[in-house]
Amino acid sequence: MSGQKTPNENRILQGDSARVLTTLPDGSVHCIVTSPPYYQQRDYSTQIQIGNEETPEEYVSALKQVFRECWRVLRPDGTLWLNLGDKYQDGNLLGLPWRAELCVLAGSPQNGVVLDPFVGSGTTAVVAQRLGRKYIGIDSNSEYCAITN
Ligand SMILES: C[S@@+](CC[C@H](N)C(=O)[O-])C[C@H]1O[C@@H](n2cnc3c(N)ncnc32)[C@H](O)[C@@H]1O
Image (cartoon, rainbow, N blue to C red):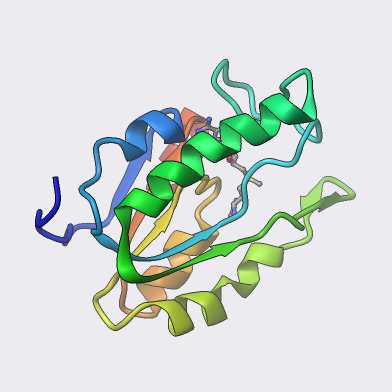
């Protein structure tokens, strides 16, 4: 699928990230900023959620499938910013992805495309839009997708 046009619309896509990513063209994204689910930390209420695998090996294997596709859709000059340090405290996210602003600024040009394959409530998308970038967000949870849209 190389050579396909860079997407020029903001999009939130619902589904399993590893599968949904296969629908995006090769080399079409400038910057990926994401905070995947932690291992056995939270229930995101979908059958296809990552994070509740029985073993850490299965968890890592699920993440590898996603990041293999991320690698494919990233442009050769693209950047990927992975936050595995996000954490809930007193029922709220500490907000480490809120620091997405610097990653988006450093990793994409004006009108560039920013992808978050675990978009959740949409921090990356909000930051991307505020900074004049296009965004693509993917999440398995339809309620998060509705909020973010
Ligand atoms: C740590 S949260 C992301 C937080 C996000 N940065 C925010 O601003 O809310 C991880 C997200 O991954 C989603 N998720 C879990 N398994 C998934 C899968 N297989 N495919 C797509 N999204 C998934 C969950 O629904 C959750 O919204």
